[in-house]
Amino acid sequence: MNYIPESSRYYSMKYRRCGNSGIILPAISLGLWHNFGNVDDFKTAHSIALRAFDLGVTHFDLANNYGPPPGTAEENFGRILRESLMPYRDQLIISTKAGYLMWPGPYGDGGSRKYLVSSLDQSLKRMGLEYVDIFYHHRPDPDVPIEESMMALDHIVRQGKALYAGVSNYPPDKALEAFNILKSLGTPCLIHQPRYNLLDRWAERGLLDVLGQNGVGCIVYSPLAQGLLSDRYLEGIPKDSRVAKPHGFLKEDRVLTFMPKILKLNVIALKRGQSLAQMSISWLLRDPRVTSVLVGASSVAQLEDSINSLQYVDFTVAELEEIEKALAEN
Ligand SMILES: NC(=O)c1ccc[n+]([C@@H]2O[C@H](COP(=O)([O-])OP(=O)(O)OC[C@H]3O[C@@H](n4cnc5c(N)ncnc54)[C@H](OP(=O)(O)O)[C@@H]3O)[C@@H](O)[C@H]2O)c1
Image 1 (tube, rainbow, N blue to C red):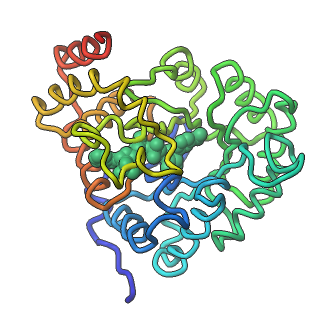
Image 2: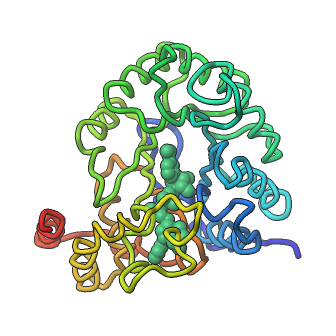
């Protein structure tokens, strides 16, 4: 059946400017790290992607290694494009990355020009695309000169295989170095992708300042701490949850460690009339330097719940203090 997107999709979503660039991104974007691999149900993945687009989510984030097995999230997204979304290619911002282990031998991991250029070629084939909108170096590689990694990003953009360059997981000093090199090459860095959520505040220790001062956008990943910052684990470990899946990156000990804080945060969220997932997303969007919050979802209902956080993004000073108190206590 032909897919016709919701005509109202651009009215409900909020869009935010990505640093000083010409691009605006949806306040909430969809990540395909989990739930889109060959171990997952394709029909569900397909429905999540289409529902996202129907709700104004124009940005889909991938990486070479997403799956499992690695590469299959890109293949499945390629199928979703072929079956439904390709007519809307010009309305989509599709990103991918390279930086983690992807294939055996010395050229399938890290930050060399050899790895980054050949990995993007493979990603484009898997997705059936001529170009991606954003190509990221997924993590800094201490064994490769940063100039080489940045020159590879610049080369890829000049080739037209990516429209913009980004970095992910770079600490503030390395990020600044990367931004300066990219600027000198004539390919300014569009965006940085750090992990940031109520339970993991490292981005507040210098990175957000560097991004704000340099006009680089910020899309934060794992905003729900992989599902911890939601009602998912309040009554134990559901069988279909990330923790219960053998390939899931979230482990049970983290649930147990953080549960006292999660319970307190949940009470605050309910008082606000939000789910904990919604409050966690709204909290991130308070900072104007955060361009977009990159959520994962294993169902359409989760995606809808997360997007509904946009209904209520304001916090009172008292609420913010209560949140900090809950996080400080054991
Ligand atoms: N650059 C990097 O190094 C890097 C690293 C990690 C992630 N990322 C990107 O960031 C994206 C998001 O990461 P993430 O999946 O860890 O994000 P997340 O949003 O923190 O966690 C997503 C998980 O939380 C649960 N969930 C989502 N919405 C919910 C809701 N409304 N209510 C209850 N539970 C909810 C689901 O868990 P269940 O599956 O258990 O249902 C879902 O799979 C990735 O897909 C990827 O694109 C990038």
